Length: 207
Image 1 (cartoon, rainbow, N blue to C red):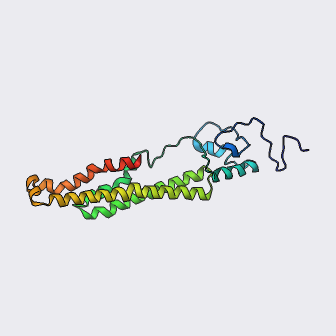
Image 2 (image 1 turned 90 degrees about the vertical axis):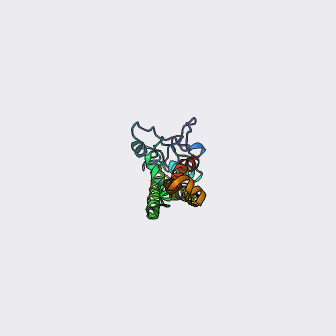
Image 3 (image 1 turned 135 degrees about the vertical axis):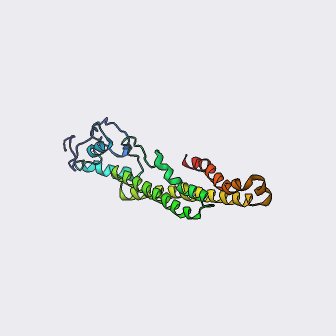
């Protein structure tokens, strides 16, 4: 019989009472202690990403990725969703609001919003790759971010603001209402309604 401390694959056997954390029931090989420091240093020193990790642990890592087990390497601030950069996703709503008066602003505003969507998608894919996820998992993360941001940041809010602004313009164009509110209010009412509606539309989508 082979000694209890080794296996046929050359991988040290796990102790009977090995602790189990995020790798769940798939991996009997507890990871090496992670040093203190930044997330990048922990990732570099982690047994999950170390090339010296045993074959058994690498197999368990692939199994965990297939089963959707969360690889938690600590909290990371999302600069594209938790900082003022998130406002770039609302550029097309602002463009639709001012588009009633300045139609040339609509197309550039959509360009800014789609640039934000692409940047967030690349960031989420790079984050998944840095956490050791496989190609399929990285692709799924990119598709999820792309679809969510396209719908939540561009198409749904943009179409809603466009309908509100155009409807307000048609309403104030009526003779009775136009004479009652005056020329200045008639000119700027569609833009004001669109800008005021932006927080009420995007806040429920983001949360």
